[in-house]
Length: 219
Length: 219
Image 1 (cartoon, each protein chain N blue to C red):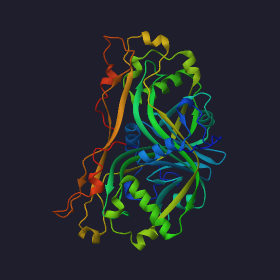
Image 2 (cartoon, rainbow over the protein chains, first blue to last red):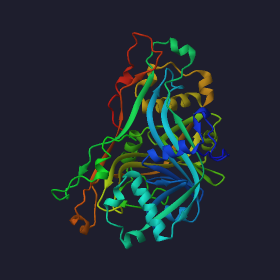
Image 3 (cartoon, rainbow over the protein chains, first blue to last red):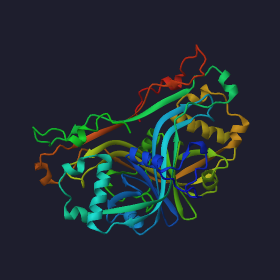
Image 4 (cartoon, each protein chain N blue to C red):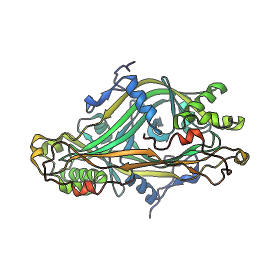
């Protein structure tokens, strides 16, 4: 199990007891999420864009339209910050000050690289597709040349990362425990539900294995 | 109903048919979410941090430890981008290229301002608390002086914003509809579950009304 070096960039500053710098914790959050929030800078202005992604080892793959601003910027080696956060509960304490959330969060720092090689690009698209829909890639036809041309795929080598994971009941001021106020956690669960076929699935075609396997999965 | 002016900063660049610039759509997403992803720049490096928040009119309130980096940076008027995204489904199309997600997303641009006035600060903290736990503020004791001193509250006036909302079945290439592959949407639902009291609620104390009202709520 590896550790990310703690530097100015990835150091968790608040509530440090929740900080994790091991690859297992960071990868665990990245692999559990479905959407990432990608931060980049253009002319001094920060932007945060939700993007799907896939991870393989110490590389995150992102994709978009090949002519999209974010693909051009990240593809030219701009610094990028990627955050994946999953909410697990509202921590309702006996004071507003001690109320908070339970969550799993990972932050990754790196620089983007536009993938130019078609084989590498297809591999990255497979990793992204498989992240949300494991087994789906093999069920689908191969991407068409024009689809590949229209898609810009970015590799972000993870240079630095950290995670922050909290899963605790409220921690209140000692005086507040004497008050007659209810306190605890309201769980938040994100679940994949029953798949809904679109109107053009031919009769006799059953649900794909990759899709059937998802039902009831919790993020 | 207002509209945000479409400028270089907030213009939706990809899949423009999902773009919304009306305040109703943007506020709707902001009010539905529980966590925001806050993007800022320090020494050219982008950072994305998950933060809870509250909205009142055209102001977003954020908070953190008064000595936290993000509070100091945003409090000094740094440009900020706040994104709130809720996932509603995995769109499993007949090709990887046409597969995507259904989601509600809002992006807000503004500049931070540290709230110095105690009354305004308390009001903002009430808005933040009430966002996740409506009715909770009145059930809790008033914040203590030292709690107020330890908390930095940031007001972000919404200068520009847009939303992007998709809720569609797959849209496939005409040729692909002839293939015998299942396609459709895997719904993603995020739900508040049964509240769990911590171990120190005195016997005879029933669940607070603000908490009981949450059970089963979908984000």
